[in-house]
Amino acid sequence: MRTSKFRHMSLGDQLFTFLIYLFLCIILVIIAYPLLYVISASFSDPQAVISGEVLLFPVRPTLRGYEAVFKNRKILSGFGNSIFYLVVGTVINLVMTMLCAYPLSRKEFTARGKISLFFVFTMYFSGGMVPSYILINKLGMLNTRWAMLIPMAMSTYNMIICRTYMVNSIPDELYEASQMDGCTPFKYLLHVVTPLCKPILAVLTLYYGVSRWNDYFTAMLYLYDEQLQPLTIVMREILIMGKVDMTQVTDASAVSKLQGMSELLKYSTIVVACVPVMALYPMIQKHLVKGVMIGAVKG
Image (tube, rainbow, N blue to C red; front, side, top):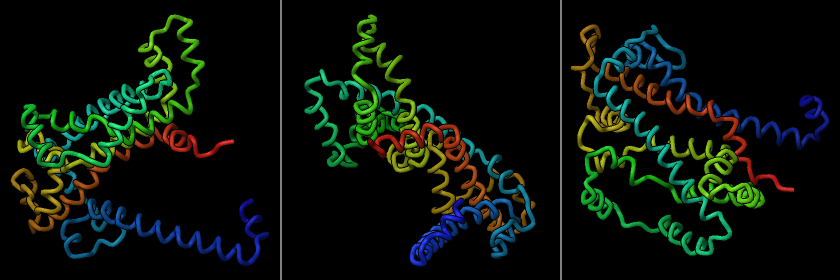
């Protein structure tokens, strides 16, 4: 079908279509090659990695890198902390976003416009890094898990997206019908609004989840206990600072050069760090596409 349509195009349209596909293929190669290289390097022999033998496919495949990752206590601790911050933090984000977006979406709430201005103001102006650090310290959250959960409990941008979805997609007649059935506002939010907001909640779950998983600046500011630091801090030390604790790698003696094992550990850690986010997307893909497309087509 597509081939027949392409043949019936004019020469100019065919050339334009060809250039578009060529451009997209170039973009695909630019994006896909580094990913394939990292994956291939993580499965390759350490000496092949440092000697530049790895181009696209693994060279002398081995699982030494992943064995080193799962035997490194600091990486495992950081991975567990990141999972905790991802799950608990995202739940807090969704709850706070819903609790804020719902009242601001109700027309009978006359002060919603003025209150929304206070939220929008925080998108452009903030107290700054030093006042925020002083506040966290005074609240007793410094070097605690709460420092990773409470300060980022809600994103104003995501709240506005959720509020707009409620206004445009949930009719007021449902609220009137629920009142006639004796439903309280909280029950209406819990049993009516929340199920209808599954598409936008899927979108927000991905937004919040990726933000939580990739966040390292918050931990760098507020956490100095290694037992509380997420995987991003550990990866920063490995990838940028070059601090690889090889004492935790029991098979380091089997590697001829420490540098090769260090490079292999870097690539393997990157792959392991990408798994949770990659596993999250397929579970919410259906709702994500629907949520993103809402409002894109009218009529």
